[in-house]
Image (cartoon, rainbow, N blue to C red; front, side, top):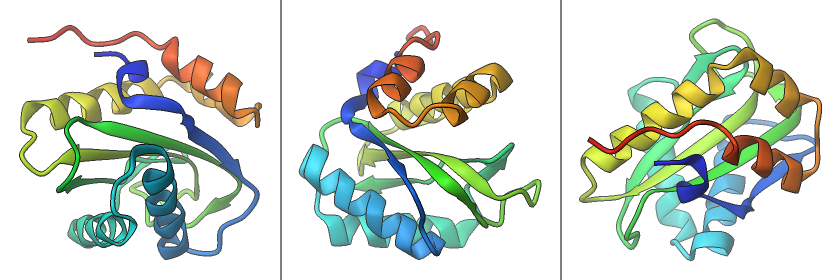
Length: 154
């Protein structure tokens, strides 16, 4: 599995400012509707419900919100780079500016976990995070993410 298998170029964008986690999730839901055709209210509800289980801010300014939805036939991703970091209740208490949201079919099992592991490992790379933060062109951001090493199928 590669990042390019789950992340459409149209699902990458930069945002100048967002005021709250809820507003960020609304943006993700609208972007998911526009790019992947999923129901925006269902996506918003699923992301917020997942976040109540525990924050998805994983540290180093990265958040990996994720949810399972009806109406998807595969795992898909959305990437947002925030120009102004947002408090996300991250494990290291640092604000978040790199968000990679994953949406998976309700029935997905191992594919959802593989995608989460791939994205997590990819964004652990300090050099890649620095490059992502230094660029605001969605095409370039997608290219950087797509160039990351994949994971072999089990």
